[in-house]
Length: 153
Image (cartoon, rainbow, N blue to C red):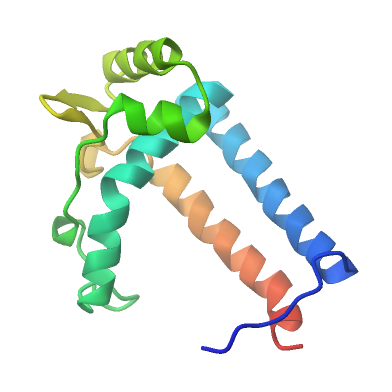
């Protein structure tokens, strides 16, 4: 795929940045409303979800096992996440991240394993993030619709 050159100082880039930041604010507000999480907890939970499933999701996509037509949550290999990877990424204190991980575990949003924290499979009654996933899909669809004209230029 050819790289698309976009002037980062131009109006289209500013429009894209504005749309992206707006979706980030909307996502944070949704986590506050639906999961009763503050911004710090949302970021830390997001790190556990992203770091824990990113490799597994990308590997499954690369193997052709996850497409818009064929997908199963059972095909994703999740990995435990250590607090260090979170506090280094977010620039937070180690103690803040540790305390928040314990809190998120007490809420049942994550689980502690010997080698770190794990985001449990979201299915059935244990699925606490369905609305967040639905919002994410809708956000990507909104962004795609609004940004497609600029990508063709």
